[in-house]
Amino acid sequence: MDVLNKVLTWVDHNRYLAMAMVIVAVIVVSMVGCKPITAGLVSGEPVTRPQFEAEATVAQQQLEVQRAAVEKAQTDVEARAAAKAIEVNAQIERLKAQATQEVSADRAGVVQDAAAYNAAVVSFQERLSGGYDDLEAQEAQRVALARLGEQVVQDAVSGTLTPTGMVSMGVTFLGLLGLGVTGDNIRKDRRITTLETKAAAQT
Image (tube, rainbow, N blue to C red; front, top):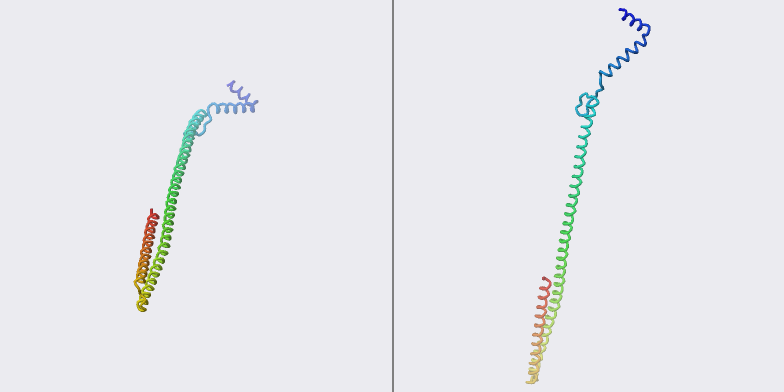
């Protein structure tokens, strides 16, 4: 009792000091008995500092794994894009080559058609000219034969037809026949030339 009375008396005389000591004691006890905790980065449960730091290390490792996966995915995408670009460029070059070949073939066809047309025009002009020449030669031959026949009739009627005149008229007649044969040969030669020109244009 004496000790308790002494303590109470001391507390009564030093009440503020006693209160400070009690507060300090409570703080010390709370600091020693209550450790700091927080939510874990991985588990989400309340953890202490060492546990928090351990989970932070695990979380950082997981992030590193994810970063490596993302970088690998980006590299793969870029590689596929480059390969696709090469493939597309190759297709474009093939299409260009095919288009160039087709255009060249079309141009060659047009050139061949133009050559055939020009040959046809030349052939037509030659046949047209030859036809007119042939007609004019035959008409001239018919006129000459008519004149020769008329001369024979006149000489016969007038009594001036002599053997020498008949021979001269025969020679004239044979000459007219020769001109006809020559005209036919010229027309045949032109026909052969026309056929050769057509054949050369078609090859």
